[in-house]
Picture 1: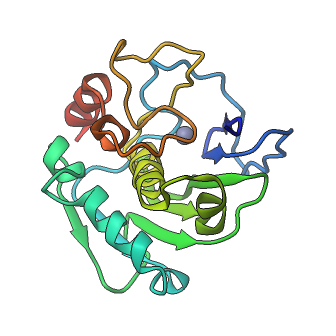
Picture 2: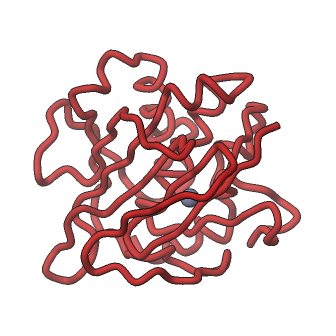
Picture 3: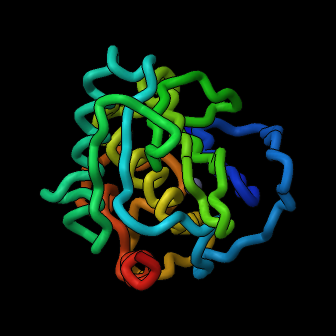
Length: 207
Ligand SMILES: [Zn+2]
């Protein structure tokens, strides 16, 4: 199995599916923080209200990703089912959309990345870009769809303010694991697409 690595920054988190040193370019206001798995948020608070989402132009061709992004947001077992957050899909992206999914090469073996690209006047994140490297997921995962689902749950969790944790750092819901663990977990087990009680409580309180 490949080793997985992630880095955190004030405005950027990357899920890396390969070994090696990763160079992370942080945006202007960044000061790398040493977050703990019990931190909330991982760096930036999201703006409140409906968590609207859309797909960037490159995303439409990847139906396997698109459907799983909807699953990760919807009211059957996605964000709406697990938290108080209302998610709304917009077929066209605009500056008012909270989460823009983009399928793109990320580099460094990263399978997913979430970045806040715009803060509102209150200092909360107004626009997130959730980038998924489908080629990397297909290369490293035994089950592409399950890993896509896990990665989407994880990256969306960052956009809701949740921090991630590592296998080497205890889960905030120990002994329960959640999709906020970093790395390759493509078993399809329910926990790989589930936020734990710790993060759900923080998300629900914030929203
Ligand atoms: Zn992460």
